[in-house]
Length: 440
Ligand SMILES: [Zn+2]
Image 1 (cartoon, protein in one colour):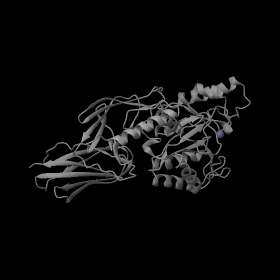
Image 2 (image 1 turned 180 degrees about the vertical axis):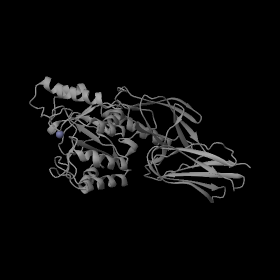
Image 3 (image 1 turned 120 degrees about the vertical axis):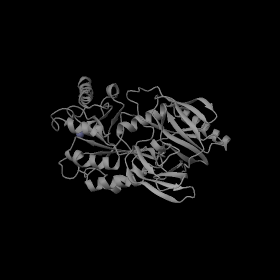
Image 4 (image 1 turned 90 degrees about the vertical axis):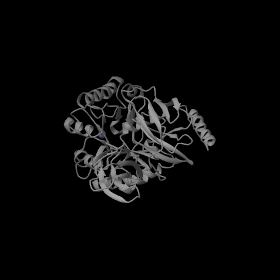
């Protein structure tokens, strides 16, 4: 098994070598084409700051835990001055605020200095008003591309709308295609949105949607809000296949994935130190890539940490081997993969939710109560239950949908007898178990 895996990684190295990228991976590693090793990237981009983008789309995306991109012109002539307060609110929720020029003019006939003004000043204006993110992408007004050499001075990607799926390695980042949505385009219903996304599964491509108006807000080519919502519901229901992220973050992911270098600096009994680096500008390229490593022979399971902090991970079965999979922003310190024997981390094929990190309870041994801490990489349905040594359920500590982040629960064992108890955390398809000792 070990040998075939080695060949498998060697093959990967050779394959990536052929495409001209500088990705270098130590044997046993794989990097996801898309985050979480999903099949398709999906980006919803909205132009011209139509009012229902704020009133309807953003709340809808927040509900689904998805991020969108707002391309806004920064001048006052096209749609009036940008509403920086609303845009900052959206930015604070994780959405991308990006450039749609200053005056919203077709740039094809413009001289270089005017094009430079449209591209430079809109970026500068957004960055002067919006904190917490950089303005790194641009959507050409009327989908007419500006001069590439000027674009490259300010942006990592530009969006056109030629109605095709973007390949996983775009030929030209300054000409990223999108689908025009709404009554002037061919993508109108949830069914249309999903047909586009599904058509990208086989090639592992990227579906980019271009929207303006929603319902009757006066925006161009409106999409019905119920169709938009239904498309998000479908993507959520198929979260193992579809990765929904902002335009800019998908570009970051592609460039990082292709530039990443993964090296092991120390392999000791039960502990592997890994360096994940790239040569890209860390000011812009600060998005995580998803990495998996085959478990060393004899390891029942593993945990992951970085700079002393637990990193969410999941165990994945792929090509008859067991991998530990996690996200890592390049250039942010050494990662340690540690052998783990005690946990009941199990993976069912196709599981997508990252295994929550269930920390050791404290205190332990305990009497009469102890606290459990866990963290979730993504929002989801969680149950946290306690079982006795015979597997009998004794208490439900938590049940329901929780946001991503750190959570805790207290186990009160007042009426119970001394002995071993197990705390079992279930989040999506992932299960993790911790042993606790009650000593009275
Ligand atoms: Zn526009």
